[in-house]
Length: 343
Ligand SMILES: Cc1ncc(COP(=O)(O)O)c(C=O)c1O
Image 1 (spheres, rainbow, N blue to C red):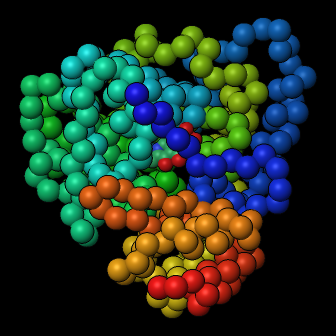
Image 2 (image 1 turned 135 degrees about the vertical axis):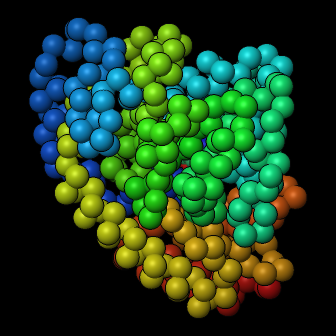
């Protein structure tokens, strides 16, 4: 099988990293303190297999009960648990295209099939996405989507869920940067689940922590499938401190959204077609022209963005929102490369 290839993580050299949608700012200082405190606890003991302290605090923040939450070793772990639970050999997983490439790998690992429904040019989905079929066992919908940064409304997703014959996972890795999310829909509809990550909006990609919000019967079922100790004691303590610091989250969110607005405006001024984004990145294309040489030129200058080429869709650059200073550097290099490279 083809492996899933994550974005480059250079281990040496000083790069401006705008390729994997990490947060450019360090996490809340309370997280660092929680990690120091957790490191002085008895690490010879296994962690709490259910992450009770995290679930209690997260439940208060999200307005649900703790038994509506399942902790994961990153939200990729949640996606793996769901696929393992629902999609058996020869079953079908549905996902939109273009979207998060890992989903297909998860289907392949199950010896299952997957079906990619193309977004329309305005990044909405047609009726095909909600169509019932006997072998369809799970549907993944990233919202906001990657690489486009676009969102479907909660009302649209409610309609999709009503028509589907199987559970729908709304992957909300980037929802903290969006205007809307599907938490209320989860509360109303047992077929809908939401996954979240602390990698992006809480600036904890290095830690590995994500979680699922779903009805308690679903959570109880999924617990049977997960590794017993899928989250370690340090990440559980840090994640609990992170979700507890909602003031930090809101300040960080506002900063990222302000920089996103400036970045999109500047990219358009340079001649890129940029999709309006509800996430901490933007998708830019150049009409009639590949963006690969720009990616390569930026990389030579130690700026990493994500070059993506989707068969039957086209190519573009997905650029994560960095600090204002990082964006200025990236935009100046793009302007210079656009002038220098043949069109
Ligand atoms: C749509 C989407 N879902 C999930 C993830 C995985 O996040 P995590 O770091 O929590 O595994 C990513 C990471 O880039 C993503 O883009």
